[in-house]
Picture 1 (cartoon, rainbow, N blue to C red):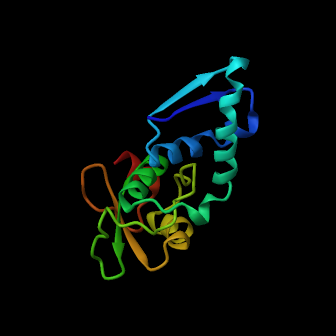
Picture 2 (cartoon, one colour; picture 1 turned 135 degrees about the horizontal axis):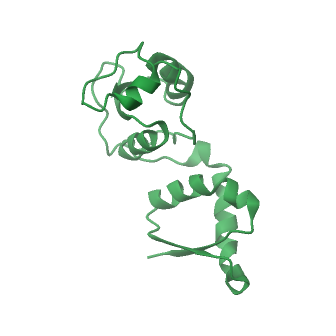
Length: 151
C-alpha cells in the first residue's frame, strides 16, 4: 500500500486535488494522509511530481471504460454506458480511451444532446453513449440535465 502526505499550504496543488485523488484511486493508492506539519514536508516531493505529471495527463492517462463511466457519474450526476457506433456496449475492461477530464457538472439547462455534443463526443469520437435516468430508463436526447439528475 502506498501512502501519500498532503500539506494544505500549497494552493496550486489544492486547486488540482480532486483530479489528483481520482488519478490516485485509478492507480490503486489506498491511503492518503492529510497533514500541515512541516516535518512531513519531504513527502510532498512525490506529490509535486505527480501534480506535474497530471498537468500533462489528458493525453497520456488511459483508464478503463468502467473507470470512465464511474467518473462521469461522479462528476455529472448521472449514470452512462459507453457504446460502439453500432449501439453495442463497450466492454468495461477495455483500456485505451482518454480520461474524461471535466471536473464540474455541465449546466442544468443543457440537454442530454448538448452534453453529448459539447463534452462526450469531442473526447470520444466514434463512440456513443446512453444516459440513464435514476429509475433505469434511458434518458431522451432532448431532456434537460436537471431532470435527468432529479428524475
